[in-house]
Image (cartoon, rainbow, N blue to C red; front, top):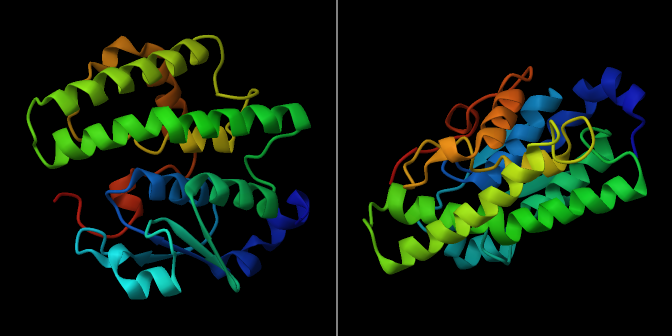
Length: 223
């Protein structure tokens, strides 16, 4: 693991090795791009033509990620997929946004798993169907919205009593949960019902280096 003190002075030498296969519409990709932005790390974006079916090709699955998903981080000879694993890896090798104790690490991972299973999963699918595909109101959309609102309520209640998800500073738990909250598409959710999340978003977006997902990653921003 790189000493955080050494990393601060040497990151210009180490970080160009980071390459991220990503595309602007993906909040999961944004989680990793946001890590780089807030940490002040240089990285190279490699555009993934997700809408054109690139991740479903045999070539992609053989050479980039057998799971057929983005983001994928390249660092040296390694390729790492799944945003939560990528964030954990980056916090380890850079010393940025990680847990300070074993107890904190468990809490960070608890919220990353919750994000992947509930907070991001339902909201991202709702946003894709309703906001990007313009599906209109359907039983599936209604189901997804109810589940997304339930997850939002849990996170809002948690943030009502603290500035960030774990401890008193931004961690990769926050970066994971932040993947889709800055996406502009309509979902039919009244976000004013979640004031603690709104305040948390402001705290993150006011951090030095923050950039909107559509300004940070390559590719189209609509279907």
